[in-house]
Length: 427
Ligand SMILES: Cc1cc2nc3c(=O)[nH]c(=O)nc-3n(C[C@H](O)[C@H](O)[C@H](O)COP(=O)(O)OP(=O)(O)OC[C@H]3O[C@@H](n4cnc5c(N)ncnc54)[C@H](O)[C@@H]3O)c2cc1C
Image (cartoon, rainbow, N blue to C red; front, side, top):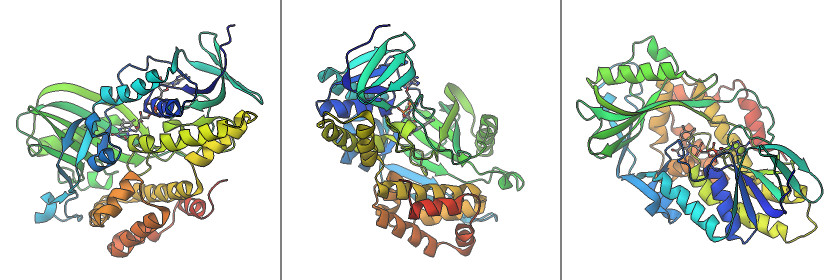
């Protein structure tokens, strides 16, 4: 069995998580190799959205392929009774963008190539760790050695371990790109959440709520996606598809040409923070970096990769550091106490939202988007400090109607456990 010479870091995977961290490490002049089951240039299966201001602050606005200024949500009147307010739009006054997936991928690959990052093809199958190196065996029988292993193989990581905190909330979506007999949205519009449910019967409105995420893609094409925020067990795709059909029929909309159908999209929203004592690191979905309230991650990857890479580069200066020492420094930079406390609060919030019935949920979101812009935007992008996050959540609670306040106060399931984690995060 061939063994390759050791390097500083071996990154597993070729999704956004792996490419973001490989590129940031290579910027720190570390010797980096990447092992991925697929070609890193293969097109990614998903489209990635991000707030305009977020991508601008990163200086990467040029990586967007679409940008919408007219960004709205619909939460109806928040009551069961028919009302004139049903079609009232909540205006977000924040641009929203979709990445050009190829450009984003190239952005990271170009940096890696300029720093001579070495690419290996194959599946990681076995891992051995001693005091000096992590050694990964690939499906092709090659052994790759590195001072530090970073497992970025997504939501079911090949080596990374996480504690079991019970059922995982899964976001599910059913989406289509197509043309319609008439425009389903205003021209140039982006809809973050359309929770209107006048197309459902009273009984159906007692079932788990879903919303429409939608955008005008230009030239008469629209992307519409029926989404369940998060549930355990997840809402089925058949249910989402029938909800979308009902929504369209109620508005007199017919698909005249179906270009693309997105099936089988499952996103775990509240994965526990991995075991921070393990001698390997994670990044991306494997390391629970997805935002538990929004399901977004790419902005977080772009912000957190340079911080983590700098901490790893500093730790590597100690030539006697073991893989466990390096990983420990890395975990401290990736998941500092403040972030872990915020994560517990976010997960607490998600538990609450998953229990809310439809009218409570709609009232909750009406109140959420009435928060000052910097609070709701900071909440959704995970850019508030812990104190600011607590303040935003408290303001939300104080301003909420009683139906929502009761729901927020009543502790069920693992909510108390999550509040405890907020007070005393895992070491
Ligand atoms: C449907 C959906 C929509 C999303 N939309 C957005 C959005 O709009 N905005 C946003 O910011 N985020 C979004 N996300 C969240 C997040 O950005 C994505 O899930 C992202 O793809 C996660 O990146 P990742 O690199 O961690 O994992 P993945 O993209 O899953 O990549 C994992 C990689 O690991 C490789 N791999 C797996 N096993 C092995 C192995 N044994 N050896 C070697 N390689 C291996 C795979 O081939 C793959 O290259 C969305 C997620 C989903 C599921």
